Image (cartoon, rainbow, N blue to C red; front, side, top):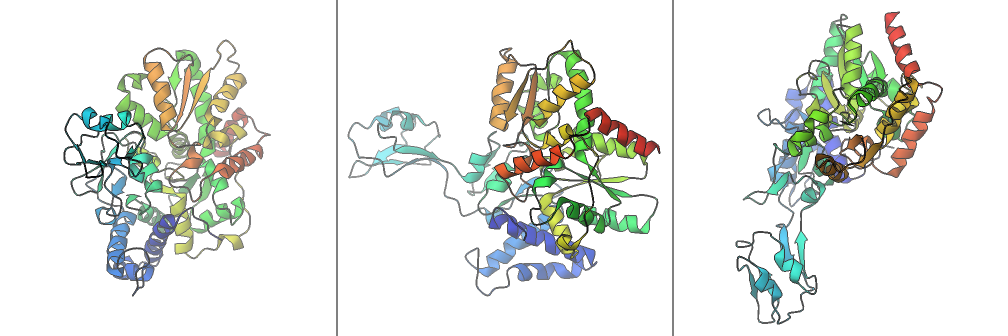
Length: 479
């Protein structure tokens, strides 16, 4: 049975599924008007004030499922029509206010935004409030609280603010496209653009043109996602969609680990380059530290480059947990290597849109990567892999001393210390999502269980060293 963490994810999936179904049957143009009615048949509303608003919002979701606003360079977009249920955020006086007569809050406010009713209970004039929080700092009852919307709480880099229409607005200059707001918004008002139609078009063209093949590159976190089926059946399902073959992005991680270990030993200090949201965060928030970003590509780009060097007609579709990978794919140097990026949510929609029951399929295998490449999916895996790569390559005169940053707040703390030359470590492993890639916004499910699944998946490849995995891959293509 398919499992989603929330009903918002399930709604998003249903829209993607219907768009995929219509695209596979080549009836998309005719089907578009009917998709909202299919998902919200009515006449009673189940999610909003009325079925008509439900359908209007679904219509906007369909646009995102078809690629979103081409004028917006960010892969994360806000559906204004769906962003109207959260209360106005900011500092508010709670019921804990005792109506004291000291009125310290009033004295602390620099704009005169605090007033009192006949019971001496404080009130904040939102027109005057500048959100400085001084009133809260002096309240003896801690009665003044900073009430933030879920999307603002989720965004640890403060790239979301509320506009004059009380809707969320994303600052594209500082957004790192991690998708934390997408996953946390209780109304699904923030959505990542989907390129599912691009993937279907690539598959269709490959059927008509035998000169090129479409490779599916799957992230190692796939091992924890499709819990209702076996991983081998998921691989068979991907091939049933029309993909020529399935390659592990973890093999790209093996390639990166080998090269990054040498670069670290040569330069003496590095920040990792595997997480595109982390890289973007350094570039925007700590630009002086950008010179220390590893020159290695991400595992996605590394394996795509290896595939295209050996098969010049190849098309590469990356499938993983990450919305930031969609943004990375648009960067110069990556867009030439990766032709499309999908999330696990979108892969599930492809299966069901083409009516593929993966539980009925035979077991196929993934056998490209090493243990160390596969554990890149979780926080700490990259550091372990770099240490192993140093050992395998006989680099004994350098000692890696990594700091593992689990989530963007930990990344900020490490980068701040490094920028002031106060960090004792010589390698910063940065993962924007909590837990690493297994916490990505495009996952079907999230949780500690996913880490255990990834570790188990990694242990299946313990017989290979990193060098073995790379060598086997290179010889396979040479043959």
